[in-house]
Image (cartoon, one colour):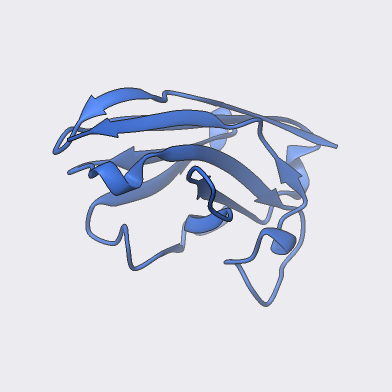
Length: 125
């Protein structure tokens, strides 16, 4: 089992920045990728970004490319999401997720084995 705990959410004005953190514990040695998803009010959970634990290869949703950066600190078993130039449409609960083995896809919720509880990000206009 892997436990994931997100932090760093909050209220920010449009154009501002936030940095989310996700600390992993438990059987983290098997982590293959870690990703971020978000879910706005009345919407489905959508893919935001993912990073391969070994090597650091990243991939982003088009909606956040150029504004968000995903990174990881292997020693701390922590993944980050730096969010800049935030927009009201970025308002959502942000979830951290991890894959325990290689998958052919990274953008579906079913591609991930473990999830955090989520952290709220609200962007005011």
